[in-house]
Length: 199
Image 1: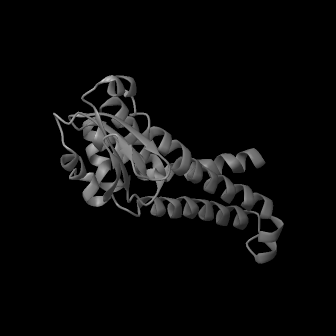
Image 2: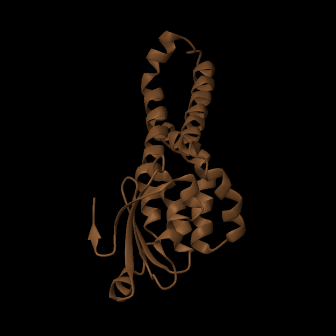
């Protein structure tokens, strides 16, 4: 029963994030149409908070029907079934934390390839920025926008909202990077550039 409750909680935590997961898979496999469909939704600053509420809503609805079915829909019933509820809500919250603070940030660095060639290239400059993303779950949006921009050779994300961008200044300028549409929604601030970091 405990394993079943945990599994249901994980499913309720995952379902609201299907759009995010599809966006990431589409980016990996180059499915541009799918990316363009989901990107406007994910650009909402509060989308991940809404998704958490939806996850908890699923868990609450499931718990309601479970308690009702077992004739435990009362404060005493809730106390009697606190183990079930703890596993259900704990699994749901745990999956959201895992996605926001580990999986999505990890995916943001999936596109951080090319460092060796970027660092070996004497024409490469770097730009160290912080972006006003509301949570680490938005990091893949920044990385995706950067990795599809001509002249940017590599991107490295670091928790919670910092990005190291390696670029070829003969193809793109610092100003061009900072004016990318993604930074219109999530403004960037320069921490360092060229050969010095000012953290």
